[in-house]
Length: 394
Ligand SMILES: Cc1cc2nc3c(=O)[nH]c(=O)nc-3n(C[C@H](O)[C@H](O)[C@H](O)COP(=O)(O)OP(=O)(O)OC[C@H]3O[C@@H](n4cnc5c(N)ncnc54)[C@H](O)[C@@H]3O)c2cc1C
Image (tube, rainbow, N blue to C red; front, side, top):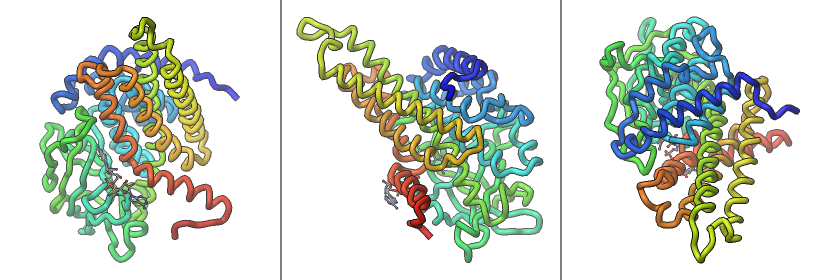
């Protein structure tokens, strides 16, 4: 067993950490206050290759695999969850669906521009009536000659207003339902000049509790044409492509929460060493030491789980159960850690002048998106019970 990262992965971490500290961190507060994505920082991230970290070099990526991608998300999660979410939706689900489901031709056509950051990707699954029950989507794709016509709307789409390339799931055969009658497509929603494609309308930004720097919006389609060759996977089996994509995305969402938990721990350590009450530093008080120990133990356990699961992915071993655990544990650990950080910082932790307050609001979402934690518990139990011959879903 070797727990050391390769020299390449260590170098990648140094590069990303420097970028995160010098570019992402300084822009985070303004993005949070203005509820606008840090467009210039996004461009710089693209310039140094961060948009293609996991993908093979033949498609313009850095070829750093899932482990490299986890490093990216951990380092971004350490400084700004919103920025990590923009990159996560682009790489981990938007572009990943194209990589996992696309033919060689489709990969070659779309991935280079996504890896270079020339184009931003989104992943469109959720609809007003279809959240956890993703199989209840209603968006239609109707065949017309060599094309499909998309009609319907999607909700809560990260990067929805920014993206020009999207992976999207629509029903092609209502009689079969989404599990056997939904098809995944890659679509182009904006041209080179940023003009929206005919039939596509992005909605306004959602007002959210946190993640203000990460744009989320409803999007709608009316008579939107997509060529048949843009199908990801097989006709009728798009649900599989989308679920496989989310499995991979959950590992790196776990990595982003690891970064958040680590940042909270670091902040508590520094503050406890400095702040004095009753004539001694907080660090001398046992209740504070207990919080530090719990945060460190949970963060370290999460680190092991995330990087072991990334290793499973990179070595083509089964990882679905572990991916659910990364997302489930990671989101709850990050929420607990930032909650403790607010407590240890006292009034300062409640102030908008320190980033703990933003971290507190931002952390909550990881328990909800990419499949809520209740759904993760069901998925994990389902995998375990299947191993002993019990099926809990048809
Ligand atoms: C900021 C943000 C960004 C997002 N980005 C994207 C994106 O890029 N692309 C995309 O497609 N979607 C995106 N989403 C949507 C997100 O994935 C959904 O919100 C999520 O899957 C939950 O769906 P819902 O909100 O409709 O909740 P519901 O499904 O309505 O669930 C409500 C509650 O009921 C619980 N529940 C539901 N079913 C069960 C069950 N069977 N057993 C036990 N409990 C259950 C849930 O766990 C939850 O607690 C985003 C959401 C947000 C808030």
